[in-house]
Image (cartoon, rainbow, N blue to C red; front, side, top):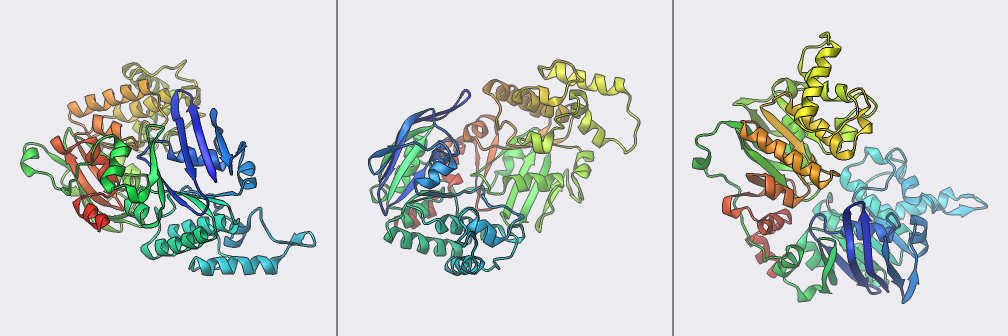
Length: 504
């Protein structure tokens, strides 16, 4: 029914898709699998009309079609439910579901029919809310179910489901799978992206596996074992590990800087425990949305835990705000620099000095000379390519913008540096420079906790890696156990027990 052949897509120097392909038949559920950065989401976006490929062809029922926009995608009978929801938070449930496809009567929206349609969908999906409720007031799992309901309402020929179960509860997943089976019986084809291996074996008929922007293999799910899938995703047979505990003797001579115990932060973090020692670079790995950002922000004081505790330098933290964490010697670098890290229209000098300013007392008079010297020293030390210090931060390249943020915090010499995907969207040369800076800091005694979406980055820079899965620590990898295969297996919740469960 649908076939994608030889799809290529570049974003600058980054190759997102390289001769990728897939096909799905009528009334078939295809699993699209691959580790982070393999190209799955880009393939979905190409079909949804959000990304235009550089080359390649798309066929429906043997006829070549062109999809240049979301409108083109809809015309071909494609509907998409995204992990990053397409819902409008400030609109009602009814308006979100029907948006652009409202039933009409005499040129106006047929309110009676619209209400009937939405109530039937809510009942079908077992969604407990009112059609007039604003989406922003609903639980994340409810919003995810609404995202799927919105796509199903369009009566598509092909339904794209991108990590839709990531925030769903067990009963909601069962409801969704029941609906998927009904749609399958009606002849609807589905492309299902998930990192939960048990779901692939439970609901999917066929599978296409991607690695490093390429399609590696396709076939019937029944022809693959769990180890086979991980092998094609990583290029190596999986190594399984259930260990999450450190060996105390390995750190007997090092000061414990951070001790997180049984941390819970709704809805993603359920039970996280981890440690970080002086001069150590600790990595946090996991698929997107497993609680990494929440834990980092809880340590900083930006998020209040609902359970558990965080000890910093031997004392339980009582930070009421990030400023308290900064004053206690904690630095924070976000990969979302334009949202959380930078003041784009302010001068480079002010951006660099901002962290130091927050650390000092309020209303302290700052001289231009003091700000200029502090900033120039950081620019020189960390090789930030700038025009003038008075130029706006937005004038810098992406890599230099991120180095500016790194320089801001490291120049303050914090005891603990927290990094949340700090090299996202950064070119490879700038990434290497940032890594070198982090390693130098750790060698000088700074403790570093880094979350990264790139598994290779975590492997290269971390001494130990805590892998989060479903809001818990799936594994702690160090020494000989710190391998790419173990990391990927743990990210997908695969251990020996899970392997036995799926084999049954």
